[in-house]
Image 1 (cartoon, rainbow, N blue to C red):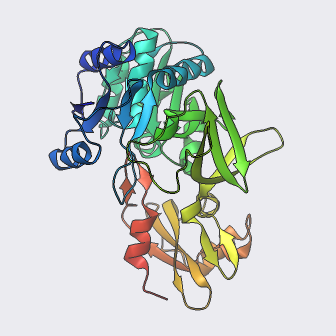
Image 2 (cartoon, rainbow, N blue to C red):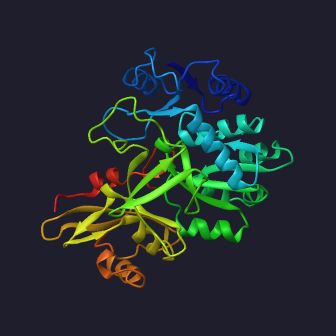
Length: 379
């Protein structure tokens, strides 16, 4: 396995060439690495660059865990191609893509794979783009079907600028992954006619494999006591550094850390991560549901819900909020009453912390663990 360092704004033609060689078997498997030297060295060492991998492994994608040794999802050529083909089919056919996510993460990597499969070269913009840069990149994409893959914080940034909003609205589809999308962002995108597709997936499934709650062709979904299991053609063959218990232990399935439900029409709804669940007074509260309930409060621009230690309840629900412009700080009692309009009152926050911005990790996921560590006073 060889390392490929990918700069923040990579040369698109070079990326396409590298992936072409890997996908057609001319080149050995690769480990995409970020440009940051410390992170690249850590990943190179822990995922054993230079040592052999199975011949059918095309790419080892570093997982985004915040602690421990990176596991490294082993993605084969068939899994990558199945994912790209299924995405193209669901979206309406091959097209030109905008690469606005780091290509060492699976979402950005799959933009390049889809481009290879489509015979196109993606337009590239820095993941921390300015809105002018976003508009300029979209302008270069030409005619025919045009797609983008973003995370919610990038979409939120674009929605603050009329020109960037119009540029995204001109695309045929805009995939949004990397975690839940705040309700206010979704509402603004809909009002602006941006053709958003919400995606769910991970490195272990070659990226997004469920679009708007519906599995892509060749993808299987089932629930086990509320835990989401994913299987099918896009599944990785395991980890470079296996863990115990092994989420791949059941042949053909990956046991995620997410819980969810399926509605009467068969649409999957992801409720959150198992380890994000808050046990308060014998009840279980899923932070994502509370965040959705809080999102339309007029004082809140963005929020994250997490648990802190409580000597009586075990945990209590806390909320970190970014205030809307000019808004007064809402009290916990006010927010609990707001949540109680749509959820059990127990789910409402018992404490509120105002922050300038929410901490994030990876490609934009809210870091609830950091918030809990910051604000947990020990009960």
